[in-house]
Length: 106
Image (cartoon, helix red, strand yellow):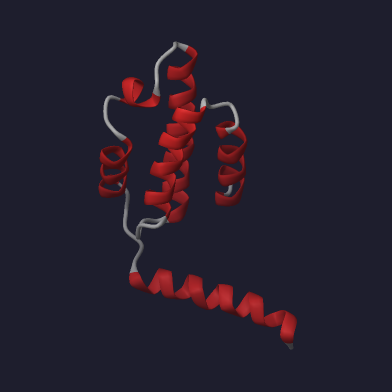
């Protein structure tokens, strides 16, 4: 599954969450996506998180009850466990994105 597919799947799954659980998951997502971790690995972990919260929700638990910690603590733990993006990889990504945007202008 590509990173883009994982993001789409996660977006779809989050629609099943209660408002409180959705807020919890989205807080973690924002933190992790804004950190300097490898995107594909991060998206896989975020998708697993959403599945976990859905499972807990089906058993009548909130995300914090099911996971056992608040969203900011979990987000920090996830980013600490994931591999960091190498500076060159980040630069390559931004150059690639800039190049794809400029193609339409030339």
